[in-house]
Image 1: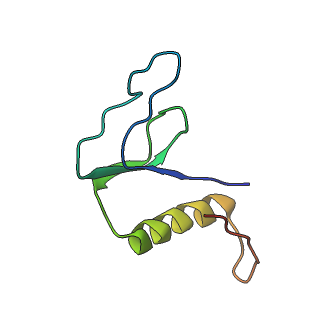
Image 2: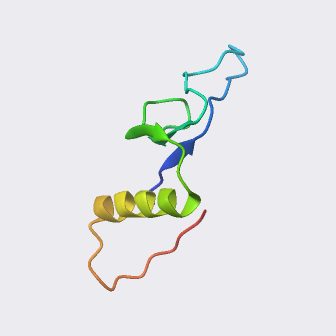
Length: 75
């Protein structure tokens, strides 16, 4: 199983009630962890199609899936 997250804003953990990271308005972070770990890239908001393409490119590269392999995608 391979995953990659996208953040449009920070979450707050129940025990701290403080944002786990700062993300300026109008930016997004790709590849960030569910606990606020830094991602692969930050940048301006992009379309869902562009983000999905970038995420799939990263996951497929990490998988090293041969051409023609079948994969299941859950969004």
